[in-house]
Length: 304
Image (cartoon, rainbow, N blue to C red; front, side):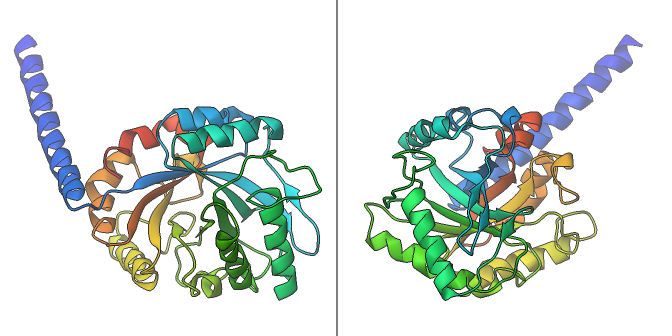
């Protein structure tokens, strides 16, 4: 009995060593080719995820997206950072930025009341965001005080597709007015083109695009769908040569209806596909709360 146990243990150790060598080889190849990226995470929807300061202190993320501005258009605005004190966010934003971590504001989301009725409406929304969250000034109290966010992430999932191209142009135009660049990013669904942001993305103004390869079985990575996933990824990267394209994933099986990819599978099978693209940027995770539950980013950070 002891002999069989020791033999089994040796076999297990050998298998683990083999896997480690293969994993190190694939990671090393990606690093040598300059195709490793960074991790973007969404934060702001539950007190259970901890503070923004803690998220940045973890050194796991290169970008944190505050989610969400859930109402905009028609002169109506609502910022929803469920369970978090706005007064605490401002100093935390500055702390994150001191660590060279970008902090963006997500607009839209899966739940909310938002739309753009006209080009003038898009201009009004851009002005509101600039004055209250970016480098502008406002007679209204700025939610985060004098902290200046780095840009805006478009997570548009309903409410119509019109005038987001105008909004992107107006926001990008502020780069010449402030002291720093205004980052404009987006989080489209993986079916191409995205039904809400397709027109806006064609402007070529988006610095990063975090494509949601989840809740979309037709293009998510899974056994039996690798070819479809690969085609979708190549379509996105090929259509956005001026943007860094991120692979959007749920950080836990329960974080989305479908599309979860285990860390080992991501490193061994998925990253070798996506890192072939010159404009691969990294991965995006939904969300900080779920990442805390699973340790997903910590498990894959060395490879992405």
